Amino acid sequence: MVIRTRDEEGSAKYDFYLSDAPPETWLCKLAWVATAEHRVEECIQRAKSDASMDNYHVRTWRSWYRHMALAMIAVWFLSLETTRAKGRRP
Image 1 (cartoon, rainbow, N blue to C red):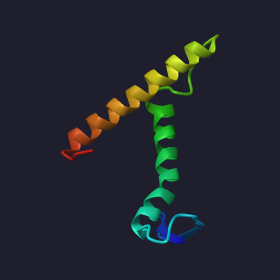
Image 2: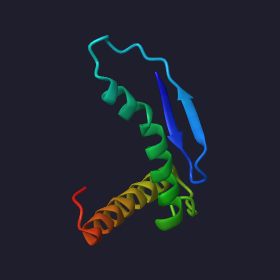
Image 3: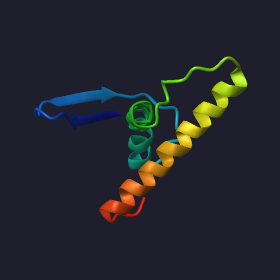
Image 4: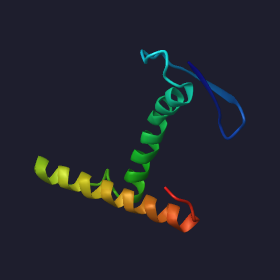
């Protein structure tokens, strides 16, 4: 599968994917899964900038897990509020 996207400058970018999905799998579903990587990266970058996911000073793994969970909840809340303010449904 080949997915073509355009960046801000208008130049085309091609991504190539190989899948072992069954032949009856819809192409739009394969494209959605293939582009999920970019959405995950955007969410992680937003968590680092908006919820201080990368700014932690902990001494134990338990504290680190708590900080990460709270940061993810904060990003989830910010995402819901952003979509609500724009008048769209998530």
